[in-house]
Length: 510
Ligand SMILES: NC(=O)C1=CN([C@@H]2O[C@H](COP(=O)(O)OP(=O)(O)OC[C@H]3O[C@@H](n4cnc5c(N)ncnc54)[C@H](OP(=O)(O)O)[C@@H]3O)[C@@H](O)[C@H]2O)[C@@H](O)CC1
Ligand SMILES: [K+]
Image (cartoon, rainbow, N blue to C red):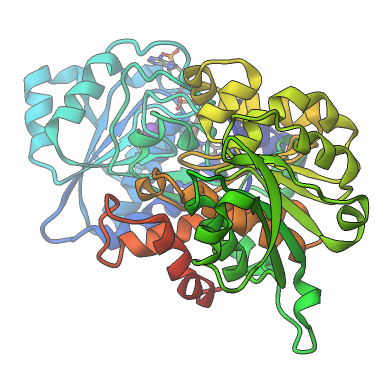
C-alpha cells in the first residue's frame, strides 16, 4: 500500500482526472460513500446525533457527500458550514448544491454566536471533521484556529476525513494545533504524517478506504514509500518444502556477547532458531562461553579470543567465511572497549549478507567507507540513537527526519537500513521505504533489538529478496508484542524473552 505526501496525493488526483478522465465529482462521491461505509458500524441510528463540520476546500466537499449519505440512511445529522456560502468553490460547491437540492438544511456558522455553535456541538455524540485536508498551508487561520482547539476540548468522539484537520500530510515534526481524532478514515493512500511523531498521535485509529483511484495513477506519481501489511507478510513469508533439510534453511553465524553481556547472544540465537534458521553458530568471547552455553542447547559455538572481556579477534579463516556461512549477524552485546577491527575483516572478506546491530554499529562508524564497495548485502538495524551516532546528528534531528535521513543514508552507502522506532522503516539501497505497522511501547526495552537481529538473520537466509525478509522480521517482531499486550501482558512487563517464547503462536497466524 503506497504512502504519500499531500502534494503527491494532489498529483495522483490530477493524474486520475486529467490523464485517465475520472471526474472529480465522482471521486468525491466515492470518498464520501466509502467513509460512511467505514464508520457505519460505530453509529446507532436511534441514539446518536452526528455533527459534520465542513471547511472551505474539497475536504469540506467530502463532508457534504457524507452528510447526504447519512441523512438518506435516516441518521440524525447537523451539517455545519464554517466558511461563508459564497467561498465554497469548484467540486465542493457542486456537492453542496446537490446536498441542498436534496432538501437538506445547512447550518451556517456565520449565523450563530460562537457559544451557541459549541452548545449545539455538545448535544452531538459524534463529530465528523471535514474542515481541512491535504490542502492546508502554513499556520491555522481564523476561524479554524479557534474552532479546532474548542472541538478538542468538547471530549466527543471525533472522526476525521482523510487526516485530522490542521495536521500537515508530509514528514512533520512540530504540530501547532490540530484535531485530536478518535478515528481517521484516510482516502485511498495513507499520508506520510500518519507515521511520524507526534503527528501520528492525532490520527487515533487509522483506516484506509478505496475511493476508486486507479493503481496506474498512484504508481505514476509515487512508488517509493509503502506500508508493509499483513497481506504482504502472508504473500512473502518462506514456506518449507517437505523435502528440505537443515542445510536448506541457512547456516548462520552470530557474533555477539561479552563477559558482562551474556543475555544478548542468547536472545539473538534463540530468535534466529525460532524463525526457522537451519544451523546457527554463535561466536562469543572465550570468557563468556560457559555462561552462554548453559542457556542454549540448539547452537554450536565458535570461541573468539578476548581482551577486556570482549571479542578481540574472531579468528575466522578465509575458508570459513567463504564456505561455511550463508549470513552473519554481528553486534549484540559485543561491547565497545576494543578496536572492532574484526568487523573490518568481515566487511571486506565475507561476500554474503551481514547484519550489523548495537555495538557493531558503534565500530562500523570507523569502517563506514567500506560499505559502498562490499561484495554482499549489508543490513544495518539501528535505533534513533545509534543512527544519530552514525551520521553525526542529534537524536532529535533523526526523530524529526526519519524518512529523509534514512533514505539519504541507505542510498549513499548502498545498504538496507532498518531504522527502529514506532513504525520501523526499512529502506532499500535504491531508496524505497517500507513502513512497519506493528509493535507497541512494550518493545522499548533492553533485549528486544537483540531478538529482532536474530529474526532478520533467519529470514534473510530463507528469502532471495532481502527487503521482504527484513520487513517480515520487523512485522512479526511487532506482532509478537501486539499479541502479548492484547492477551493480558502489560506493555511494562513484556520481556524480550517473551517475544521469543510467543513466536510459534505468531507464526501460526501466517
Ligand atoms: N485526493 C483525491 O483524489 C481526492 C481528495 N479529496 C479531498 O480533498 C482534500 C483536499 O482538498 P483541497 O486541496 O481543496 O484542500 P482542503 O484542505 O480541503 O482545503 C484547502 C483550503 O483550506 C484553506 N486553508 C489552507 N490552509 C489553511 C490554514 N492554514 N488555515 C485556514 N485555512 C486554510 C484554503 O482556503 P482559503 O482560506 O484560501 O479560501 C485552502 O484552499 C483531501 O484531503 C480529501 O479530503 C476527495 O474529495 C476525493 C478526491
Ligand atoms: K479533515
